[in-house]
Each structure stands twice: as structure tokens, then as C-alpha cells.
Amino acid sequence: MKILFATSEAVPFCKTGGLADVAGSLPQALAKAGNDVEVILPLYQRVADNWKDKMSFVCSIEVPLGWRRVYCGLFRLEQEGVTWYFVDNEYYFKRDSLYGHYDDGERFGFFSRATVALLNALEFMPEVIHCNDWQTALIPIYLKDECVRWSEIRGIKTVFTVHNIEYQGRYGKETLEDLFGLAPGWFTDGTIAMDGDVNLLKGALMTCDAITAVSPTYAQELRYAYFAHGMESVIRINGGKVYGVLNGLDMAAYDPAADKRIEANYSLKPKKGIETMEKGKAVNKQHLQETMNLDVNPDVPVIGIISRLVSHKGLDLVCQVFDEILGLNCQFVVLGSGDWNYEQFFEAKLGQYQGRMALYRGYNEALAMKIYAGADLLLMPSKSEPCGLAQMIAMRYGTVPIVRETGGLKDTVHPYEAWCGAGNGFTFADYSSHDMLYVIRQAVDLFYNNAPAFRKLQEAGMSEDFSWPRRAEEYNNIYQKICS
Ligand code: ADP
Image (cartoon, rainbow, N blue to C red):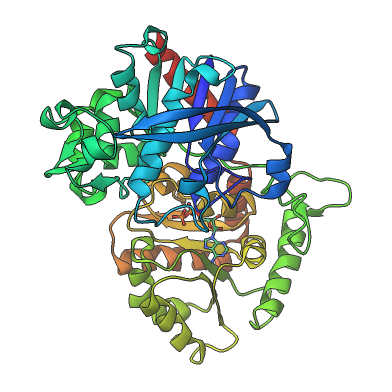
């Protein structure tokens, strides 16, 4: 199939969050599966010069945006079977950050409008345009608006992926015509209207051909107010076109057998020059304990947290029973930054648990990898988690996850069942600190008293296939379904 993937960020060009990882991996996996794939994204100042040097200029056009006619350049780059297109407008994109500007609505309105206007300039006319989050939410609407006059684009289908429903692109009613150049009918018929405002996300959910959420459980959860940030009724009335597809993991970038960022490489299957899982993890654990000033002791379980320290990551549960957790004879490592109250809480506990607790406030990828490789358990008690990456990375490195059953955590971590040894981690359902404590206790107990069963959990995690080709197949099925 011919697919155009529209995104506001993508690895390796520019990244602020998980969307960039998806946009960096899924197009390649789709191309490897035999599709023709193009990606379109803004040409930010932040895109490194070495990439810019490799791009070639395709064309420039004028994009109509309300009463304005705006310059739009198009650059092109070939990379691993995928054609990357970059939309150039220095007024909108030559800024020091990707988002957070007073005119973000206008900037991404321009990008969406330009994507449709440029369809003739691309290598092929796509059968499907795959849009992501509110920044590309206007594309399905502009397509419908334009196709009245432009028959060639009339058959194009659209997929819209919700990575995080919290961000919706909400603007005053007056922006509809003035900023986005849309006729009042889009608002008066309710397509793009929500609570008296223009809501770009709603417009996309109403007009696209398929909605995907980044995990099957998140797709279900979005039907409820607790998770949907006001969008639950819109998801429900469009329920027949909602799908859940888990994000994949770049299995080559996160490979304990080859990762240069960790102290010792290891694998489940015997490999020449590479440690076994037990030996490799033991070396990494000792290195982690030394690096973080923890007591060096192979026999004590190390529990890690690698997370933004924000409320929806469930950290209030951890704070509520922190002393009980440390009372279980374990070590605890926290890597993260975020809300002041959580940072202060962990900081204050350091003195109380010298040698048993460690904290690094900030973002540190090298340390994150040391924790993934050296810890025994990774705690992720999230209130909500659209997909979650950390639990997948942990499993890949033989670190057993302890998670709350929400979103992608529920879809990737299967609870340990003592009677048959099934599972790849520990889970709890209710948002309750004592339910969390119960499974942490179970995990620590298993570590101390049943090493073969604990090892089996590690092996189960390391054997999971989180690869992108699997996910690409699921997206392919959705593309085919909406095009048939
Ligand atoms: P979210 O995207 O909501 O932050 P995910 O679990 O999907 O949560 O992805 C978080 C990613 O960011 C993981 O790869 C994790 O290792 C990484 N990460 C989070 N906090 C830090 C940190 N302080 N330092 C290094 N890496 C971090």
C-alpha cells in the first residue's frame, strides 16, 4: 500500500516524547513489510545540520491559511527504505523548541494544511494518510474540505492515532475561519466544536476512517471519563472504528547482548564472548550499586523507578508506603525529575536509608540503562499509561516489572501465578498503595525464597517479542480494512 505518515516529531531528527520513537520506527517496519512509505514533518531549527546537508529541495508553494498566503518549502531525504519530507517555513519552525509557543495552533494548522496542499508534489499519491495527535488532527478535515474540488484526493483514507488524549488542540471559536480557514459549517454541525471551542482532536476523531490508541487497553479506557479528558462520548459514538495497537520497541537499540551503555553484555541463549543472564546481571548489579553508593550486595533485591516524577505515574502510592517497602529488606533506586513534591520526598528519604536508597534527579539515559540492566525489579504503578516503554525495556533486560493494570502496562505485563509459574511480572488492579505493597512483598519474597521461579519470570520477560514488525502487521490490517 501507499502510506503517508504525518507527524510533528520523529527520531532521529527531533524528539520530545514517545511519538518521536513511534514515528522513527513504524514507517521503516511498514516499508520492510512491502509498503511504499513516506513521512512528512516540520523542518525545525533543531533538526541537525548533518541531516539538513543530506536533504534535497523539492519545491516551494504558497499555502492558503485563512486570509494569509504562506510560504512553504519542501525538502526530501531517503533513509532506510522510507522517503522523509520536511515542511519548511522559518517563521513557524525556526524556534528553539518544538512546542509551547503562543501560536502553536496556527503553526500546526499550517503544517496540516501544507501536508494536504503538497500531496501533488510527493513521489506518490497515498492511499492512506496516518496522522498522529492533535498537531496533525486537521489533516482529515482539510482532506474532506479539499476533495470537493480535487477528485484525485477523494479516495484517500485516514488513520488517526491517539498517543495521549490529554492534548487536544483547543482554541477559541473565532480561530475557525481566521486561523484555520474553515467554513463555519464545520463548527455549527458539531464536527470540530467542543464545549463552545474549536477542538482539533475532536474534528479528527469524527472525520477519520480509523482511530487507533497505542494499546488495546487504552483503546477501551478512552471510553471512560477517568481516562478520556472529556473525549469519552466522542470515542463512544465512534466506537466502531476504534482499534488498539501496542507500540513496539526498537529491539536492536535495546539489546542486552550488544548494548554498549551497560557494564556487561548478556543474553538468554549462550553466545560467544557474552555472559549468561545470571552472570551478566550480577556484574551490572554490582556496577549499579557501586555507581549509586548502595551497599554492594548481590543477595538483596534492587527495585528501580525510571520515570517522569509526575502524578499520573502513580508516585503518591509509592510515597504513601515508602517506609513499608524499604522495610522489606530491599534497595531502592529512583531516576527521574518532575514535580517538586516527589523530588523533595525522595530527597528527604535519602538520609534515612543510606546505602539502601539512591536518587538521581534529572534525565540521564546512561544511568537509566545501568538501572534496567542492574536492577532486579522495576516499579511502575501508573494511574494511567497509554502504552509505556519502560516496562518493555525492563523485561528486555531481565528486570521484572511490577505494574498497575492500566493501558499498555496491562497488555504487556502478565501477572505471576504461583501455582503454575505463568507470567512475566507482578500486577495489581486498584489504585491502592496497599495493593501495590502486597505485590511488591510477593516479588521480594519470590526473589529471596524461590530463585528458580524468579529466574523464570526474568526469562519470560526477555523472551517477549515487542518488535515493530509485529505492530506494522496490525496497522497493515487496519489500512487494508478501511481501503477495502
Ligand atoms: P512517558 O512517555 O509517559 O514518559 P514511557 O514509559 O512510555 O513514559 O517512556 C519513558 C521513557 O523515558 C523510557 O524510555 C524511560 O527509560 C525514559 N526515561 C524516563 N525518565 C527518565 C530519566 N529521568 N532519565 C532517563 N530516561 C528516562
